[in-house]
Image (cartoon, rainbow, N blue to C red; front, side, top):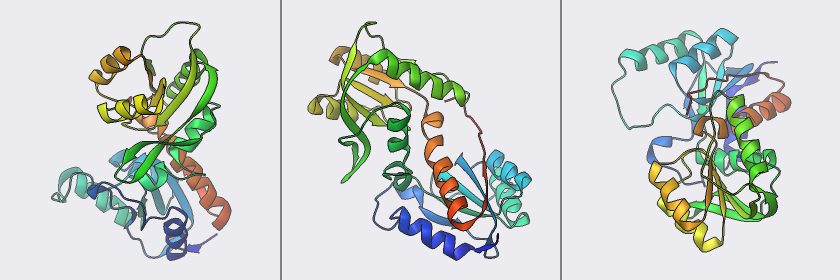
Length: 258
């Protein structure tokens, strides 16, 4: 079924509260690249890339929905691979819509909400602050840490990655957890975890020093993969668009290994 692109964009802007959610300057959330004005087939990918554009074009998509959009890194010349991506978008008459933190925080389609659900955890508050926004989630639990780690490993493996978990005793129980997908481990989130009484963090990735800090603090960190933990949102959102507007939907699983 053919739908006006403007209708789809208006729905996404409203559903994700694009105008109100703060983000990094390079995110440019919303419609990032227009087409001739129609949408019949949405392809979803974690990252805007040459692979994603080509795979979407091969699938016959005219709307590419991504979590990491076109404009990270600020203004850059449209040459080389950047030119080729734009050329293929124009040739395929394909629009691009990006949603970074608005998708991370969404209560229904958000990466963090869906990861908590995948791990069998019930959220009771926010975690991982950016400006005035809690990007992630936290909650109480009485779950064996091994069960959480195994579920995270399964997600990572499903998307071509490997989960890394800081050491813990085999009989350890997670009493309070915090989730922040993507690059969720930092000294700041560790301080927030200590202040909140969190003993287990589930993130996408983080620098090596966060594992060292966490072990000193008695916190277990499950690094389940930046890519894997952020497949959940775009996939769910694309499915919702397909149902609402009767669009064809393709999820492009293009792992980075991270």
